[in-house]
Length: 288
Image 1 (cartoon, rainbow, N blue to C red):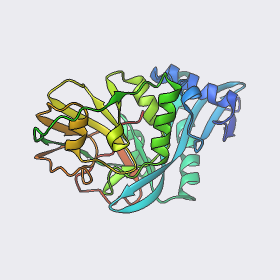
Image 2: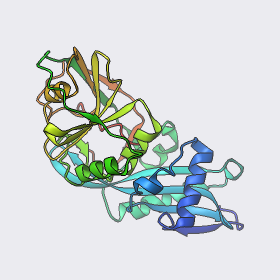
Image 3: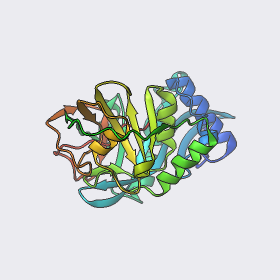
């Protein structure tokens, strides 16, 4: 049972004090700085469940709304994030209490809850099951280089506005399995990993998240656009010269047939019906 010294609070993520305490907890527990979202924009759908000791957040579980496309259907779901308990307060049932509250909230509003974790055993008692994802790879036709791209900087308000506009107009990158979520976690992933390049492709009115520009293999992490360009068009716009591609999104809309699929345990877990289960799929890793 939670300690009588603690107070339960709900729905504090949007308040300045609540948001700051969530950020401090995440920094302390995972060494992840979420404060860039103070400028880039927090996801307004986040709801948090927490145990507090005076003005300090001791334990937290947050939910955020997810818009998924699964086997051609639009599915409203919830994602679990920012799960943490300060070490001195572990073993007192705070995690189980908050998960039960969060899942009761989610179950009343959606049939599917998803999360990504490195500790799946913590979540199986709550009905979550692991689902393996797939990396798609294969050769790229040489094609003609039509280089027209610019790397965006999230330090630039103009570039952030451009990216937000594309998110507002985006179409699902895959109808088999993809997400059309708020850009907060996408932005945070790009800030956290400097090897990720956000490339604006004006000929396609598109934003491509790629890794290791200049390598012979094109590593594609996501595409944000009103219409999804073909993979070979993306490669050409990036300057060409790619002999192969590794794709971390389900490629049904890329006009490209992968030669190889590799199953990976990415820590992805689901609770509820999940139509792509048992098939080759990948949700973009552009999230923290």
